[in-house]
Image 1 (cartoon, rainbow, N blue to C red):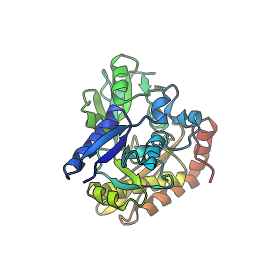
Image 2: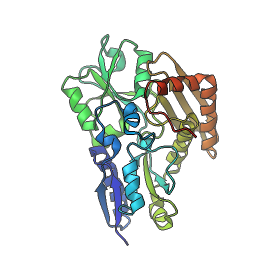
Image 3: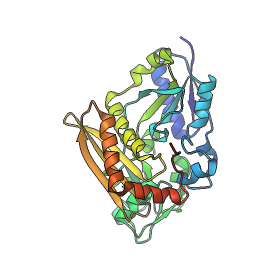
Length: 318
């Protein structure tokens, strides 16, 4: 079998993910190596995540473009991404070969001194660079002071331990994968903190029409994760948003049907539009699209226009 070269970001979590996929491939008899590639999102660390696109000139793919360049050039054969970092529409020439079995998609409240969000004192400092997390926190605790927090999971936890924040919000999946659960105090229900579309799932990207590679990777695809995340990403696409805007989507299978909870929120938490509905498991894109259209019609369009007018990365004009 030919050697398979995996393209990955260089963070501890990204390398865990790449090594996880590499181990599964080696179990199938493949020789595998990992190529570390630094992306725009990794290089620009002096601004909030939601503004990286505006600063870099990229409207999409701030954590994926350089990896896709390597994939297109043939220097790597496949790329392992956190699915939430991938634009809903891949650039021409690429396709997703697999969505792996999903880890817990929810967010976690992490703190040294407090066990849950409700325990935080008035005007406590909470670290997150996610407008989605900020909006939902402010909706339940408008007194909190939200401060930017960039860096990998280790860096963010060190800043928490160093006393820069009273609490931070991180994805449960990343904390669990790295075994950094010591300061994880509360898993936030999706009804309170709706996750990002695709959170907790890994995506395997390849060159389009690479039939041999698609076949090699097919065993990694999880049908339940694929249906849920396809639904979530269809909603995100219908709203014209990316992973840095205040949109949440969480789909799961309940009694043989696909259930989707979704939100569009004002960053200050003053307005949160929610949608909750069921759909056919066989039609995940339709469920996501209908939910997105409903949110837009109920005022989501105005919320998102206001977000983009304040200098956050806007989607390209079609």
